[in-house]
Image (cartoon, rainbow, N blue to C red; front, side, top):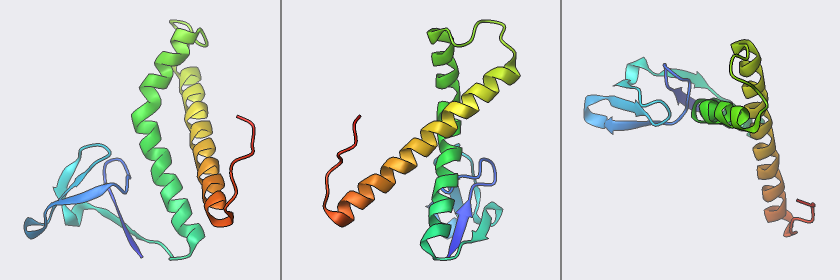
Length: 125
């Protein structure tokens, strides 16, 4: 299966704005250009390869959309102070985004398992 990725942000959220003119745009970063500018990669159609591609695209999108709000939340919560080294802030934000991505993907797995086995979520919240 061929996967098309935005050349600017790497997102798989690209769509054709004008199929006749070969124009595409990225819904992740708002990049727009010609179809030939897209990065393409072949992904085996086994479920693991598709899941990894989706997870990577989700991590990229999550990082782009949430890095600034997470940094602000850390500041408001007192986790970091004004003047904190940007490398430290970057590490903390990356950690928070990675944890959120992992938790979301784990929850997707639990939901899919419930759908397959017909059970309800008995985990404590």
